[in-house]
Image (cartoon, rainbow, N blue to C red):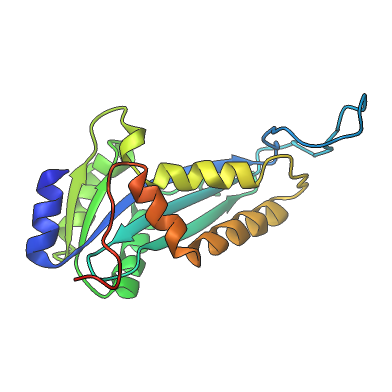
Length: 202
């Protein structure tokens, strides 16, 4: 982590933490209000293999506001459909982040096989504006993107969705709200021990 920060400072780069998560039609359970003695019931389909995968990055750079960048992928159980993000998909997300951030990127993510595969290493080597560092094994508490997923899960709790399209729309809606709450993204960094400087400070 310290090495990544030093490299980012030298290159005037963005530090970006990346991660992926998935959501199915089965609603996450959470406490809610109901009349005394009446058990609340949320009716959902929860049938089939429909799944929405999300790849996200939370990024900061001194003197700039923190950013949340993400992409979704919907799996409807059809033959030949990818069930999650592959190396080429992750590379496209990184290219999008590079365009939006307009600067070099120091990427920090976990040791998932897709992140360390030969194909991913080749894609990384083809991007001279990218430096990659890996988190220690079993250390989700060091990745602020995990806090994005936690907030997303809470916001979708008890939500009755019946189709993959409806679930995808709900996921995008929640993440878009987070994108415009810059103080919220700062809080995710603070929760991991990182406190990005205010945009008004050098």
